[in-house]
Length: 341
Image (tube, rainbow, N blue to C red):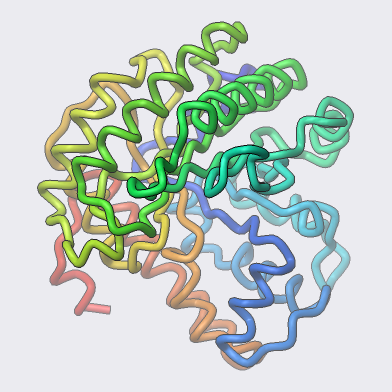
């Protein structure tokens, strides 16, 4: 495989393929395991992820890359094979989450800033040696209009941090996924999501240009434009698609390597339906695919339940969700295909 950043980025958004976000922190994976009644230990986390990475149908046909957590990129499978090598053997690109999480932004109640820039250059060099060829950094932009959240300072601080991170990644030969997530948790309407997302992406690309980041060697991991969960309104896939593409045409340069959406708390099928609607109204200047965590993993986690006897069933559940999102990335998904499973 070529090591040019733009070639790695192109492989990450190959036709009909998308990213598996398996970068849950130890705290987050414990919550997921609590739901299915599995104790979260280094071994159970390893067994679960190994089961996913060895799901050959899903991995070879539909997954272009896997975002890993620090623990996972160092782990070996039960037979001693590094998990990174199992991923590479399927043709997928290993990646790594490098941010240290969102912390309260001093002086701005309700806003957060993502930390993790200190020592990042050295960590990226280590991750490169371990086989990572892309990285991920998530900025979190919450919306609470009544409290003036997000502030302009929060948007600017997070965009600046994303640009510094991206420049360090490219220096290390690693493709940066820039993830400015405008949360869907609030009571806001779809217009508010649109306006805040527009302000965020406008600032982000100004900062990436200022930091001399080569856009061809970057992937954007954005939210879709949706009404907030607490608004009581559910936007139709057609409305989500129309608003999201209008937003990108106003703010996202055609030069970038591609776009891989986060699912952001949408249900499995919702995330697939919305991605499909976005691709169905193409052609677009960018490749648009998925970078899903829970929307790819909830079904296999439930099927697995921590039991070796359930591995085949869990891998089949993963293959089904990956296949549905593969079709959505091509604009060819239909609701009736869900029932066929």
